Amino acid sequence: MKVKKLAYALGAEVLDVDMTRPLAAGAVAEIRAAWMEHLVVVIRGQDITPEQHIAFSRNFGELELHHNKYNRHADFPELYVVTNKPLDGRPSDTRNVGRQWHSDGAYKLVPSLGSLLYSREIPPVGGDTLFTNMYMAYDTLSPAMQAVLLQLSAINDRGVATNNEHVDASRVAERVKAAPPVVNPVVRTHPETGRKALYVSPNVTTCIEGMTRAESRSLLAFLFEHSVRQEFIFRHHWQVHDMVMWDNRCTMHMAPADYDLTQPRYMVRTTIAGTPLGRLYEGK
Ligand code: OGA
Ligand code: MN
Image (cartoon, rainbow, N blue to C red; front, side, top):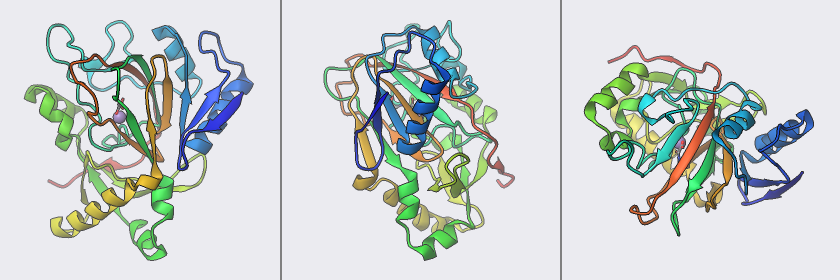
């Protein structure tokens, strides 16, 4: 297997993988090692069925069913559909997913470990996905700031995500009920690499616990800006049949609306379940 770096900060292409067949244990270990080292792994040219996508993903852990049942694939609940194509004659709830920087599932008690997004249809140009390295974001802070952040937790609330604007109010209420606000550490230690990563998500992180709104606003604004400095970023230009897997414990991603939204974009995602991190938010 060959591994080719795709950007300075993160992202690597793994070559010589065939997802139409079961992977040998050694191959799984090699991909996982590349994933932990490069944070985002791209595997191109995989003409696969939903069953093969699911089987490949299971090599990396238990799969989550997306909490939002409306966006699950009709026949394969392990697949979350991200598309701008109307579903059942109504605009897709996921047509603007990921417009803000985020880590998947940061608003849950058990945030998602990783996500594997596969492209079935992409627009002629654009429709890219950007990734940022949150180890680098942490490592490049001053020791004084690092010491402060290590003491802090933040409130993550699904109810404030901008994607809610494109979804019926009743469906948003259902989502928030299923995932009420949580308190998570601002810096997390990656369980596999032992490295520290900044862990705030502009789409859901509303406040630093225990701070006033004003204090919190300034600090979060700085952390959000710092997290997505150009030199921490890898930008993926999709081809049809790309599989892109990212580690939500040490990266964020976003999907700019950098394409003709009338052109179909159809992606399917599996999600690897993580381990418990924070606690429920008891405040108001
Ligand atoms: C996701 C997501 C981005 C994209 O699937 O978690 O944020 O490019 N998608 O579709
Ligand atoms: Mn996402």
